[in-house]
Structure formats: structure tokens, C-alpha cells
Amino acid sequence: MKKLALTAAAALAATTLTGAAVVPAISPAAGEAKVYTKRLVSRDLATHQLTRNTFTGAAVDRREGHVVGYESFSIHFHPKQGQADIWDSFALRDGTISAVVHVRSLSDAVHHGRILNGTGKYRGARGTIAARPAPHSDRTFITLRFHL
Image 1 (tube, helix red, strand yellow):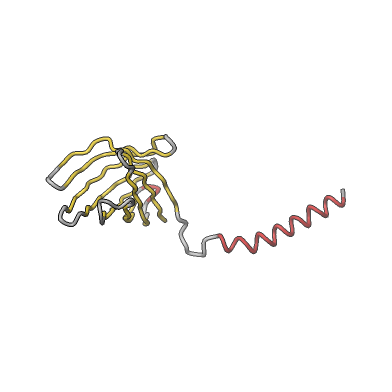
Image 2 (cartoon, helix red, strand yellow; image 1 turned 90 degrees about the vertical axis):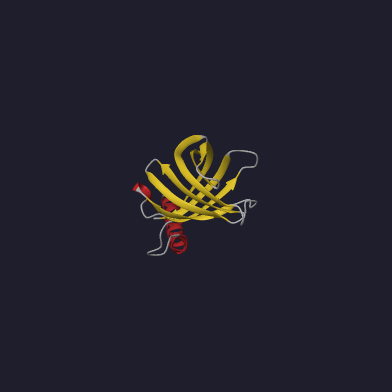
């Protein structure tokens, strides 16, 4: 019994010393914000053409097959430059996240943008958005990375 207690105490001491050496390296530094990541599969519900180069629409966002929110978007194409601006708002369970994506080339596999703000649980959100359209589909794979 004493041998088991000594072994357990030695293991605890070794773990504590090792953990103390590792924790500061993986913990955020003082004042550094935690980064959150949300991965969504967006599927268009409807789109409407407002002008020759401007569209608006709505989509449903899913995670692992479950509906986690909805989004509304507005797209303005710049046909001479082959570019577009997408203004997006994600309505999630505990708030909304607003983002803008500047599409530099319509043929790019992934489009990048920035998260502008949020409401509710996401108030003050700042970060990045990456959108990868699925080929031959109305789905888009979206990754939101942000801090509060």
C-alpha cells in the first residue's frame, strides 16, 4: 500500500512539474483573445436579382447535418474586373455575425474576407471568413475564425 502511495505521489509530482512547464506554452498569453472556429455548410434557399449586377438571397447553414442558423447575403458583381463583393450576415443561435468577402477572381477555389462585427454572444467579433464553393452545387463550405 505504501509503495502504491509513493508511486502515485511521484507520478502526481512529475505530472504537475511537466504540466507547469507545458501549460504556459499552450495557453493564450495574458491579454490575448481566444480564437473560435465555426465550420458551416451553406445551402442557398433563394436568390433574387435586384439590378443587372446585384443579387440578394438567403441560405440555411448546417453543421454535421443539423441546422445551426440562417444567412442573408447581397452580392455585387464587377464584370469588367471579374470580381465581386459579398456582404453576409449569419443568424446563429446566440447572435449574428456580419462579414464581407471580396472575390478577387470568380475562378478562385477559395474566397477570403473579414468578419466585421457580431451581436449577442458574438458581440465585438473580429476575424476572417473563408468560403469554398462546392463544384456543381448550390452549397458553400464556410469557415469563420474570430475572437471576441
